Image (cartoon, rainbow, N blue to C red):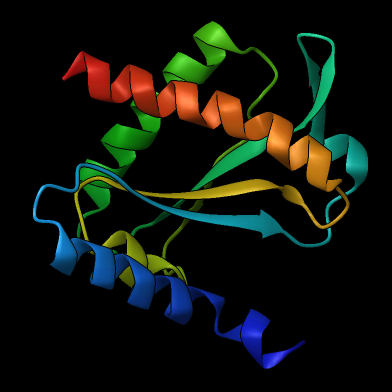
Length: 142
């Protein structure tokens, strides 16, 4: 309910644009958030004997780059299912997403919800290495 929460996509858009203006060779932009409201069992998994916050990819058909974003999400989800079964929640694919403009900034745009407000900081931190591995798999595959 705070202004900072309500403007989270706008603020992340400003950051993404700033980085893309500074570096002309950005392959992937990641807009990382946490979901609000889900039950703990919905957003938590145990992988390699540690509790992690599940990740969910969000797509916006109004992004202007939907096909490219969807192909990237398909790739990431396939690799996550192969390497880390149980890490993913079902993706959310909106016809008109609030995050659509952010996803439209690049063919390599990802919006990831890392767990929810019910996850601990440690669970989210545990998830970071799995997200990093997925990014490395993508970049090394190019």
